[in-house]
Image (tube, rainbow over all chains, first blue to last red; front, side, top):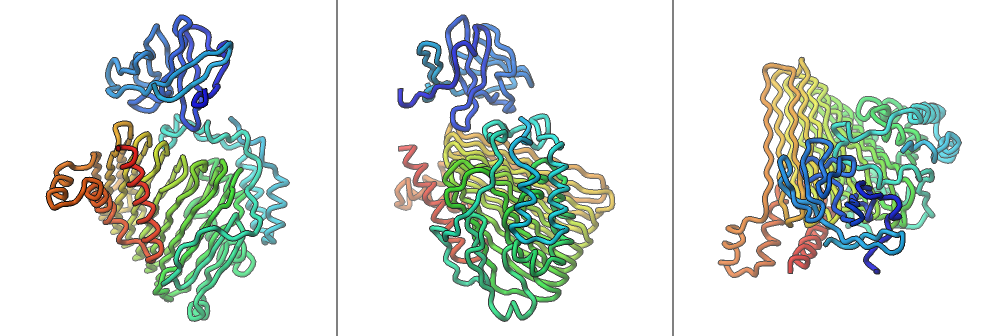
Length: 104
Length: 434
């Protein structure tokens, strides 16, 4: 657990929502899809807007700026204008604590 | 995020009293502080800030200023060849010297705190007025209210300082906020080169620095600042030259440290026939972020400006370059050019380059160019075919990439230090690849 950092309570991220946290100086978005958590870099690879300020629909997050979409499970860019995928991070949940670890 | 909770008016009053400043500076500080209280924080809706996330800066928790314990910095550059040296550590003046012949000619090279006492009239007209106005944004207002230390250089009319002057600004542990200021004032026909090294800072520190270079009619000024702040330091810097008629200014900014280096660097060409070279280089460590916003502002006719920013971007680091050429209606016969070259050294490295031309005159020549690429395998192959190992070939290609800027750095000590820092980064990059 040494490389993992506690970043939130599970209660902060109800199913169907997202939360922006910071791992050092880097913004990370955590997604709760039907109780399963995923984490990626928060910045859209197109124009660095904050994805956690966008919308989450199933496993797809949509950027609030230009509607780029990404799969939060794989980080893959699903449509233009984004062509580069998101970096994914490991997520662990222990009791009510959410931990973010190294890139997955 | 408000950034108004931590700092107080009382801090401003106490700081001004501790520095023994003239009344007018205290009044200016307080006026800036009052404006700062209500000024909006830049947001990502602002074009110049849309790539910058201010949340990790912890602005709400700021409220204290870095204070020194009078100790000397751990490392200093080789001063050989410098006509004068000023060393500031943790905001305190540690040492200074200036060759007697220059002092006799009226040259002043000292800390800004000292200059406020010894030459207040010189500081008064130039400090945060035309070059970097105090009211430019929330951070410049904070700086105007609470700047703690700085470097001051004045060269009288017609005086030429042949050898460069060296200023070293360093932090020990750091922590909290540090707001250093540099003011270089070259009177008509004067000539001077000032080189600055900014380094140190172990703890989480926000640095808001301002550099003002004022070149009066016919003056020639070269100003170089290279920062290698610690990994927990974030810097927001405003470095600008005000170029008078027929004056020549060469500004160079080097970025090696700090997890965030957001730099507004530019030149305002305000008199006919002025010229400015703006050079920048950057080689952050993995995970760091460099965000350069440049400005070539042509207000007068027959001026030229030339910008070259080059950087290597290692794995997990991000670089933003936003370069503006602005030509006012009266600035006919402007000739302005900007180039940004980025060398991506990893799949996860990111560089954004955005040129902006705002032209309101009709008889001008303005252009820009940007390149983005990885190490050229053909160049590496050629060097390896001559017997060089791949690592040496990479080192040579990267060093060659920076050479057009590094060869113009003043002082052997500064050049050697930058070369060592770049070599260390190249080695680290090669270690990450192997």
